[in-house]
Image 1 (tube, rainbow, N blue to C red):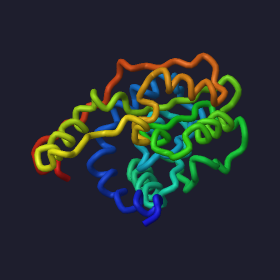
Image 2: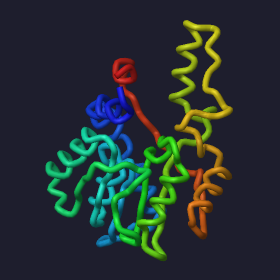
Image 3: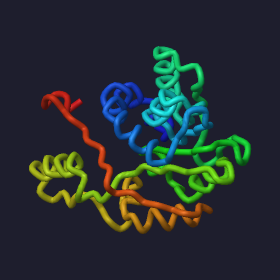
Length: 216
């Protein structure tokens, strides 16, 4: 199974079980980035559009991109259902954005570009398509030790496999490649950004109502 096929396979579950819980977090991130109605917003590695939908609801003109056709289809279905006429989706690889230079006021990624194999390349692409004076927003996981849901899962695995060593740290999994704020700041600056700010005060909160919901 290719990476794209793997993301296609989980698109419906992610859209149903994960994306709805990210809406408040997405709105907070867009507020930090200063998104204004009428601005051009690009979402890279958008999944089913947790960040894109929030931007469209705030009045931005939105393009959501992802390498998974199923994820893009999920986003487009939500756009139609909500009547968001200034939002569109397009299948596109984060490492090679087929978009013109200097096109967007704000380019963002929420829990998306943190997962790509060559993140520095993807970040340079995000900077390239952003207008001079625009902004780039990257939302990513913090330290694994502070990730309550992950530690819950690791503890469950350890209870049945005492030899399980947990999450590796050298190198860390892709999800945690910029979990260190200093590493994130360095990568953003290396991509060509100035006035880089890393905020660690905002945290996503996923509330589960039952053991079955957690399992799903």
